[in-house]
Amino acid sequence: MQPDDLILRLQQKDEKAFEQLYSMYSESIFGVINSVLHNTEASEEVLQDVFIKVWDNCASYSSNKGRFFTWLLNIARNAAIDKTRSKLFKNQKKNLTQEYFVDILENKTSFSSKVDAIGIKKYIKKLGEDCKNVIHLLFFKGYTQKEASEELDIPLGTIKTRNRLCINKLRAILVN
Image 1 (cartoon, rainbow, N blue to C red):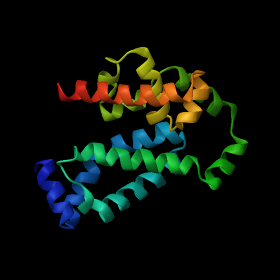
Image 2 (image 1 turned 45 degrees about the vertical axis):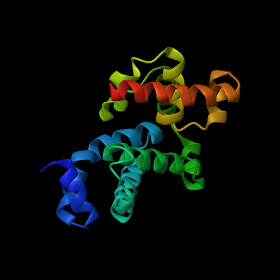
Image 3 (image 1 turned 60 degrees about the vertical axis):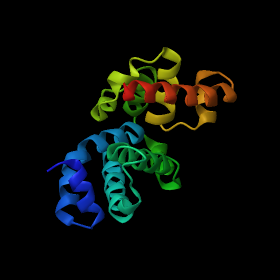
Image 4 (image 1 turned 90 degrees about the vertical axis):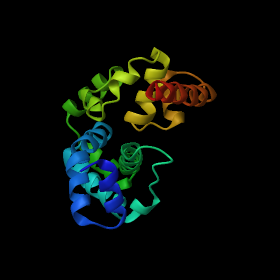
């Protein structure tokens, strides 16, 4: 069955279509969530929340606005970022092992292999280094624009401009 047919059936609240879409996308979406959270248990929890949101809000999806996977990816990324900002998640991070911090330091300078689970790494490689850095921090690490500005040591206005320009470049690459 084609994804478009599954999406239409999902919007009609067909549980079998939901199960098929879950099995098609859950692994990739988990990879995105886990690349932000670095916590398997929390990532599994957020993954479930994401698919509950998909079920509850599937009527709001429109293929005229973009691909289903992009819509799903945005829900997942936002949910993961929301989780990192929650008080409970921050409190759980207070007593972490040194391996966690080594992993963060390694991943801040290079793209995580988990990012490729969504199949976008090959497109991001086509962008300049400035774009790679901004997209990596904002979209895959869950940084706010202010945090990215501080991390890269460049003005906030520059981050905002680069973000907009880089996303437009990425869109152009994806269309071609």
